[in-house]
Amino acid sequence: MSGNLPTVREAVLYESLNGGRVRCGLCERRCLIPPDEKGVCQTRQNRAGRLYTLVYGDISALESRPIEIKPFFHFYPGSSALTFSTWSCNFTCPWCQNWHLSKSAPEPKKAKYIPPEQMVALAREEGDQGLCVSFQEPTLLFEYTLEVFKLGKAHGLYGCYVSNGYLTLDALRMLEKAGMTAINMDIKGDEELYRVYLKGAKEGIVWRNARAAKEVGIHVEMIHLLVTGLNDQRNKIERLIQKHLDHLGPDTPIHFTRYFSAYEYHRPPTTIEIMEFAYETARDAGIYYPYLGNVPGHRYENTYCPSCGTLLVERTGYQIRGEWFKDKRCPGCGRTLEITG
Image 1 (cartoon, rainbow, N blue to C red):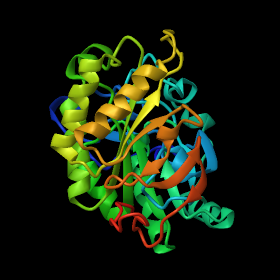
Image 2 (cartoon, rainbow, N blue to C red):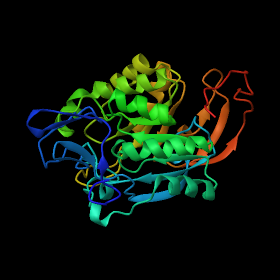
Image 3 (cartoon, rainbow, N blue to C red):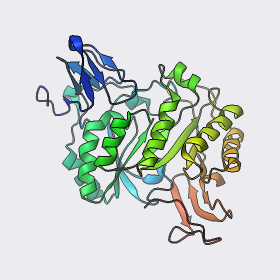
Image 4 (cartoon, rainbow, N blue to C red):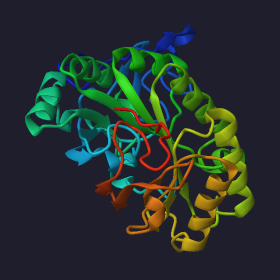
């Protein structure tokens, strides 16, 4: 700890350089941080040649939520996870839906600290089956997450992230070892969108990390917010679907989510026509489990057998209204379904 503030602790992934500078190794921005300065995410500070996280256990939001709301549709369906977050972000999306958290820098002297042991105890008291870091970029809670997931795993709780997918491979491996069993990665769009709107970030990092997570046995689902005027063009959707197939194969679910005006981006909501185009193009291209989000009551929220089309799970919003399968097999054709847990 630093200065007796429980949320300020030395970071795990960094290297010390000449002149008192440090190189952060948490996300692929790999910020080069001079003394007394912070990285892009505003949660990592160089103090006398050592890198510190300013948000260890600084919890900005906390709530038990159904796993479907993340969204995870093929990971412990029907379960709930104690979901929590901290402050700020390493991305700069002007359309951010949770900007009140992601656009706020941490203030360690005002932090609401929850020890890892207490977080796990809360999950067990609430009857949750897992722990989920969400609402804003979970990678920024890295050191804290390592301890929470480790303790949760010892009590039979799963651990998951809802992330922009820009963490380093070192961070990903450490999370998997600690007990992270699922990750939902948000693919924003093409290389141009990442360069222009996300301060030079690179699209390929997200696909690389999603594939790496899947290769080590982490359950992966992808989400793509279709933002009006930015990434909702048909050719861009077709290209993204092909990249999904190339990197993750047909069995990894993809959720196309409808955009609504937020923060500094105020175009009209994504049209239902383009939402349905995305779903149908993904299905016809061979993705087994495409979904639509933020369109409550739409038939494309449901799960259908990719072999025979039998309705398997009916949903309204994030609530499961009915399930018609047993032992992860389709009752219509007997196909084994890709479901974890």
